Length: 282
Image: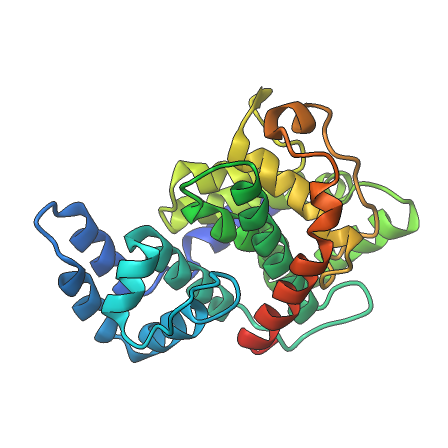
């Protein structure tokens, strides 16, 4: 194992865990006797989490026709899983410093891009006919979290990888392998394991560049893969990468999107993105 791999592994193990409210909520959800009120009481005990859930629930992202003015109502309308995912997404965003930026990487722009991917992923899931879209927004938000971790933990080395990729028009992961001996996708997967995120989300983090999990098509990973390309094409924030990949060939057959539906959604996606960026105070 290279010295960087050892350092990365150590830093991941020492990195922040998800807040107590998430752990308590998971325990409530695991109990078949739990009610909406039980979950609401857990969330209400954390004022920060409660405020964020109400803010996100009332955003254009969910397009609810009624105002959500209580945690009970948020859980009833959105479901346990969606509320849990909002807590995870907002908690992870709070874990990282957004102040330090440079010509190659700006954490605020990175989060804007990630929100764009989350919004697009959720939209594409619904467009594809998926009824349970709980994990798509969160998967989009955290898909490239390994970049932010490397930037915060090894800023000089990560910026060198960005510079190499930019100047030589390389894939960032190739430049990362050259510097670290690993990639942000692998590092992101380690973080997902640290946070005990579901395998579906861990797979989206690890395999989003191809949309394939161990060479097999996966609907969630494929949608996040396509959403990264759409977000870059629509200039949603900045991923830190200058290249825009072509979608994997298997995408179109797997998703069965109606012809022209993606282009037709650009205006709606842009509007949702702009409002969501404001909502997250970015």
